[in-house]
Amino acid sequence: MGIRKLYSNCEIGGSIYLQMCNLDIEFILKDQRENFLDSILAIMHKLHATKYHLNNYITIEKEQLQQFKTSFGKGDYTTREALELIYELEAFLFQVKSSLDMMVKLLIPIVGKNIVHTKTFGDKGKKVIKGLEKFKEKSGVNVVAVSSLIELIKSDKDSWLEQVVNIRDELNHIRGLRDYAFEPVKLPNGKLGIQKPRFKNMDTVDFMKLVYSNNLGFHQDFIAYVLAIKAPPTFVLKQANAEITKEKFGDDGHYVKWGWGVILNSK
Image (cartoon, rainbow, N blue to C red):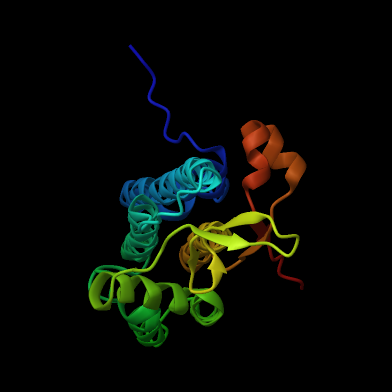
């Protein structure tokens, strides 16, 4: 009987699955651990999809750049919309938003159903923040942990997330990407060069790589901060010990960022 591996990308597997394992969800969540794991696997599916479309874009861009170098070199300066690249960019942004929609469902086994808006990452996270603010008012809640999660969401929202979701919404609902093509350009030395399609005056691959990295890091932090809400009050998040995570998980352990520290009551 074959063994099914839970992930194919070591960075995603280490940052998400091994990160979860390092925070001892069986102890923290007990009978809710399976529900939490289901959401983790759904998140990993979406993150793998973002990486898939990023890699596809890079491959197609290289292939088409070479094709246009050949045709431009022969004097054929005909250009066309780089539709295949547009499709990959749109799919990439769609999967980024979809991963966020899956991510908020991690809150259900932590705070319960119908406490926080978890259908989607609504209004760029504002709906989640609003629900968490109300949750803080309940008796017995770890207010410090909930406040830390709120600040995490706000920080990522302001630094990159809101802009990316707005771009995704624009492409999906307002105006599709057009005038996206390889163009011949004359270089300062008089030779002919090629300008790759650029997205909002940015190198598209650099933009996609940055969004992918930010999104993966946000998911990893969100997992840790969410579990901190349910952890015993003497548990605090701390940077994982690299030697210990390598011993536990092998080389993929270096992607694990968070572990538990314990506050000892002094008397």
